[in-house]
Length: 112
Image 1 (cartoon, rainbow, N blue to C red):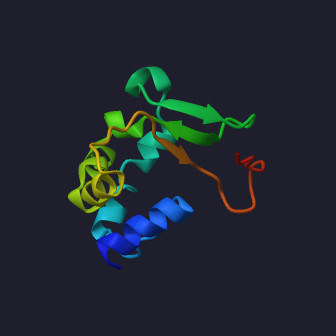
Image 2 (cartoon, one colour):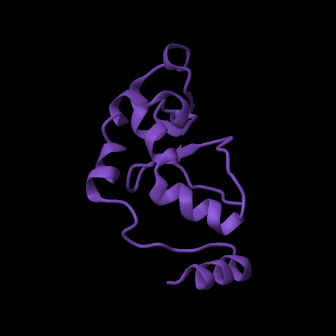
């Protein structure tokens, strides 16, 4: 898809889908800290976790500030350059959130 087509799609639909943008190794690197992210304590690693009543982690906030694979992915030129081009501006990550849900377990997600 050309840059012009991506920009047109973004402005008309509000998103652009880029399949196979990241390598399987880049995606796998995001799994590496998952045990720490799921089992850590907020006060130890400064990552906020929202939990189910059972104690299971439901959402993880701010991983991009404290875990190397997430720090790297938000700076990856494969993601960053197209976003900057689409917005015609520099960008900054203010917030990140990982939603975690086991298959067939937990409560529903209410989207807005």
